[in-house]
Length: 110
Image (cartoon, rainbow, N blue to C red; front, side):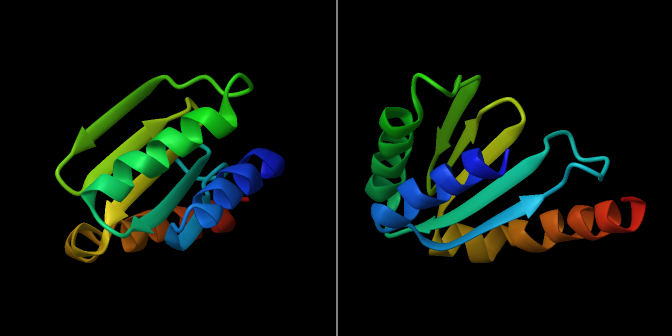
């Protein structure tokens, strides 16, 4: 699992994703094992980063679903969710704090 996360982070970092964070939620009651969040340089960069992930992770990874909206892309790999967001959306929704709470609970349970 750690190798998969490292590869995702490396692809995002190599292609100018910023403030990349990963959260281990395996011991929590969250619905996936890991969440990766990255900030993009803008909406077009969101989609470019998503494309870099598709190219860099296939055929090893199976993309269950990809959701795109203004300022935010979510890549569902089954047990891993990757959120790529503009800085505006990342600050607005503060997903990091939300996921950190699950991660803290998981550490207490683990």
